Amino acid sequence: MDLQKIEAGVKLILEGIGEDILREGLIETPKRVAKMYEEIFSGITRDSKKHLTKTFTVDNNEMIIEKDITLYSMCEHHLMPFYGKAHIAYIPNEKVVGISKLARTVEVFAKRPQIQEKLTCQIADAIMENLNPLGVIVAIEAEHTCMTMRGVKKPGTKTFTFVCRGEFEKNADLKNTFFNIVK
Image (cartoon, rainbow, N blue to C red; front, side, top):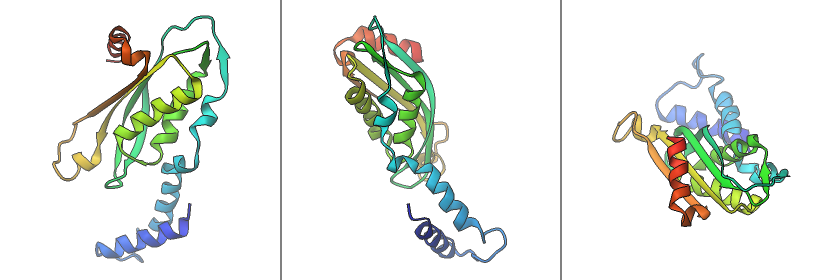
């Protein structure tokens, strides 16, 4: 990530909106924004596979659910935040992953310029590809500041996306069990 380019861009934005970039409160702002972007876009250079490779053998293949995984991301259309919760369930195929690894997988994909629909699919596909479970379902509910602060200005509005793979595509009872637990 080129922090100097980010700093230069922030200076141009501040000048473009009519601000004095030498004003006391703004002198360090370009540097602060560059460091913030380094953190909130850190998923660009990270691979979710790293978090999904350490697995443990299990005797049963019952559904595992991790819900209410807090996420923060940036809308790729306006570079404004969206935030909410991800809920994940998978049916192991004799292998499970450490519980923190699902949250880390969410974070890898959320820390990129992103749209929620794509984020939901990326998480599910990474789990399917790396864990080879019998099925996975991912649901995300999030509030988008590009919709609540600007444009239509409807604060509190949540966008809900979900995607099913494997057994969750075929079995409505599994899907219903998941949604009953996460609601």
